[in-house]
Image (cartoon, rainbow, N blue to C red; front, side, top):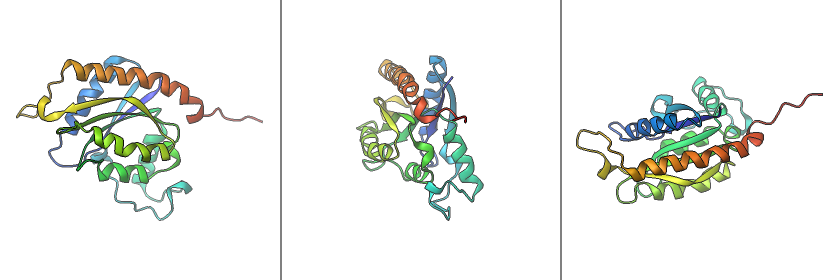
Length: 192
């Protein structure tokens, strides 16, 4: 079964991203199409580009980068649970992407975005050129979460039917996309 990494990309204290990621992780597990692995960038705790060599060399000197590389290398698909900050994506996400290079190639990626008025959709559009440059393949479906309307004062998420349908649509789209990319992502070992 293909592995879907559900990546919480906000590292701010008191963020709502972990609550949204928990909800989506539950939906993905119930969907049953993927082996689901939640990962939190706050726990990965990557420093700002501290490797002495370019990531294309894949010669990581720091244990935190080797751990991060292994997480992404073992993924078959990625769901970014991402906020919109000032009409764009967050700095920790960009740093996490820039820390690696080869590991991203042919990874299918979906978006669970959140924010105020736009529900994070502008951040998704802003990150797509970065992802495609890294040879990742974005799904067309997105799960927009208007967190100010869907979270109560106690921080409890109240997903509605549209969110649930969008999550299922995204997972349904990621399944064949991931399968189509599998040979490029994990080419068979050549035997002589």
